[in-house]
Length: 310
Ligand code: OXD
Image (cartoon, rainbow, N blue to C red; front, side, top):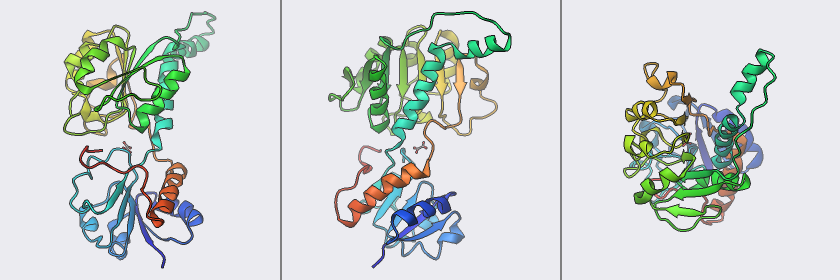
C-alpha cells in the first residue's frame, strides 16, 4: 500500500514535482493553505513542512514522521502535536550554502572588493596588498552540520579553527574545542567569530555586550544561526564602541524593523535571512534518502534531539 505524504509549504507544488519523479510509489498531497490540506491531513503518515498551523497538525492522526524543511526548529520542538513517538527530522544540507555565505564576506573584506568596485567607477588604478585568510583564526559557535562545514572550508584556506560546543569533544578540522562556559576564553583569540547556534534556553542571548566586547580589534562577528542568541539591543552599543564589524543574517524579530539602527551602521552588513535558503532539489535529495531508510525501518538521518532542543 502506498504511503501518504503531505507537503505543506508555499512551494509545495515544486516539491511535489521533484518528489513524484523520485518516489513514484508515494502518494503526495501538496498544499500551501489549510483549506488545501484539510481533506488529507488525517491520512498523512509523513508531513514535509516547516510552518504548519496547529489547527491542521492536531488532525494528523496517522502521523509517523514529521520531516521539517528547516534546520532550526525551536518553534516546533515542544509542539504537542508532534509527540515523542513521531519521528522528527531536520534539514542538514544547509552547511555548504551557509559556508559559502561566510566565505563570500570573508573574501570580500580580505580582497577589499567594495573599494575596487569604486575604483573601477572612477578609473583609478591603485594596487593594495590584500589580507590573507591563511593564518587567521576562525572561531565557530556551534559545531553541528553547518559549523562543521565552515570548519572544513576554514581548514582549506589554511586558517586555525577554534570552536565552541556544548559537549567539547574533538571535531574534525577544529584545532581546539571549547565548552560553552569557556566561550569567553575563545572570543579574544579569534579574527572571525561565526555564530551558527540554534535557539534553545541555553543559547538565548548567549552573546551580549560583554562577549562582543571581548572581540579583538578588526574582528568580524557573523550571526547566521538564530537572532535571539545575540542580545540585539546591546549590539549597536558594542559595535559603536569597538573597531569590529558584524555581518548579520538573522535577527530577534524578522523582518528587521526599519527603525533598527543596525541598517545604517557603517560596520554592519544586514542580509534578510538568506545564508541558508531552501533549495528544493537539495532538500528533496536528503528527503529521498531518508524515505528509503524509513520504508526499511532503518534509523533516519538528521533526527531532532528534543531533549537538546535542536
Ligand atoms: C532554518 C532557517 O531552516 O533558518 O532553520 O531557514
